[in-house]
Image 1: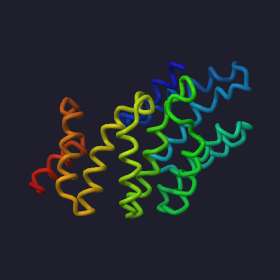
Image 2: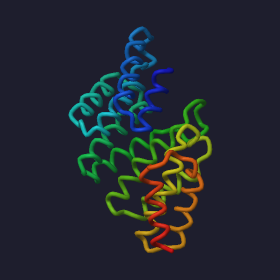
Image 3: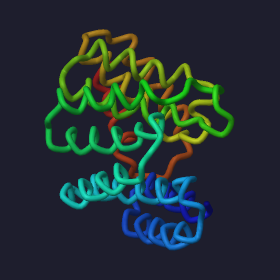
Length: 213
């Protein structure tokens, strides 16, 4: 729905209060829908994601339980697994997070398999981050590179696609692969050359390029 789209837009920009407000509006609309469609799934997920970002992990866990109680089909369980994986990642339980996030990703259809379902980037990015934060750089590299190779699976997630080049730069730099790090930082800055000023990744990429050169 419109409110879910607005909620995600606010979420991706870090406007968490506004994202929660739009998700609540969508929840009210969802009350009137056929429950077999699980209309509450999208706004609940967005609320859970906001609470994770706000470090309100108790609230996020409550949302995860609400999602689980929706009597989801097997494939839809990926959203529950994604959220609890992100909660575990926030708690620094990286091994647990990786377990949940791998299972969530395994339930996400391949790009183009299901009309209207192109959430691949959204499911790969947290797993890549979990590997990076676990210092499993080779697996982090594989997952971030997978995002850069997506076609339809990244169309709704330009921010995740662009940031994956920044994270590849950081990953290659930690692996001691200077040329690959430079190339990925440069690609990231090409994609985000018109981004709003003051974004930490843009400043970070510029600083790392200067240091590497």
